[in-house]
Image (cartoon, rainbow, N blue to C red; front, side, top):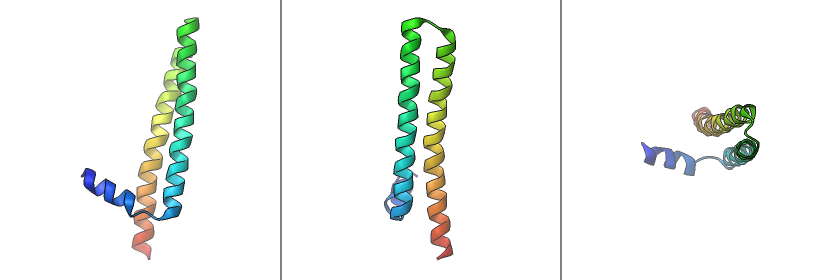
Length: 82
């Protein structure tokens, strides 16, 4: 199963790869923001910062998975149409 995912990633069109790469960068930036919030929670012990940081971290993981799944789906649909 992992080999099929790797093969699909290698055979993607360049435009889809570019969008996937940009999506992963965006997800990484959101993850860095959540890390900053969690570090500030450690320094100030404000419980609201913990919950906000944890929610933003989950959001960044959701974005990364969503970009990955959508890139595979769009590439598959484009290949079936042509």
